[in-house]
Amino acid sequence: MITIDGTYGEGGGQILRSSLALSLVTGKAFRIENIRGKRSKPGLLRQHLTAVNAAAEISGATVIGAELKSSTLEFEPEKVAMGDFEYSVGTAGSTMLVLQTILPALAMQEGESSVSLSGGTHNPMAPHFQFLRDVFCPMATKCGWEVEGALERYGFYPAGGGLARFRIRKTDAGDSFELRERGELVSREAVVYFAKLSGSIASRERTMIKGVLGWADSEARIENIEDSFGPGNVCVATLEYENVSESFISHGRVGVPSEQVAKELTKQVERYLKSDAPVGDYLADQLLLPMALGNGGVFRTTAVTPHFDSNAAVIESFLDVKIEREREDRLAWLVKVSV
Image (cartoon, rainbow, N blue to C red):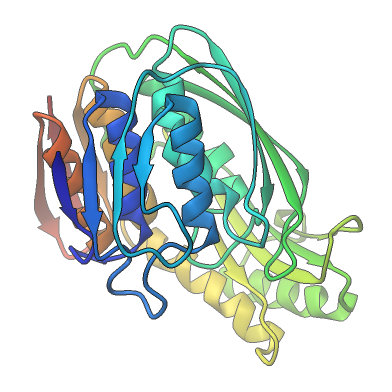
């Protein structure tokens, strides 16, 4: 049984999710200790427990420690089964993180599966739906995972209640993955989403985003979400290039001025634009799994984060692969995954 230290690197839920994903794919059992040991509220929260239960369901796994706030978990999978699955986080916890846990195993089966997830779709400290759909999924397809996502209802923090559906199937991975350049800019857009709040909040955020980034009126719009379970506000900016897309998000919070929320978004965009590396910080660590389970490859990224380091360590614990990173300059790294 592989033993994983939950305090390694960033010491958060990524270590648990990657361990579950790799256990499902390889059939190897593992024990993780000090789950989310570096977080202010360590142990399994509801979204992590949902991920554990989802992984157990699709594989018939034997699990010890699957309960809220548990700091230790043992997981021994059987055979992964395809099917149509539905999971509810039960709170505004991230549905996207639950998806990422079971996605690799389902995407490597000889057939199609569907996954419906209810809960949070746009959460702090988690990838948002547009990031999964527009950024991660196209890259995963190049590694052999074909994923299509549809958002049926937004789920903002703290009310949740969102609904997202995904169809997953295996496809031809082709040659090793390579992404060194962005290519020409195809489109850029900022969208301010708001639900059950004053429209003036969204208007001020849009004005700030346009002014700071210098984008045209047609490149920044407002969308009023009328069927949300509760109030919410997020700003999302997406840049599409010939070879890659990147998406950034900032979250409105009680007591935080609209202008500050907008500025948090523009800072992310400006930071990405300062570098010519195609892969942003978050996409970098999330590419490692499909590449390691596919034909390997190479990419350039804006940063190597503690999330990246912890994910790489877990992958190398389960698979006979080598993940190398080399700093090119202050704004770019070269990452190589050898299988």
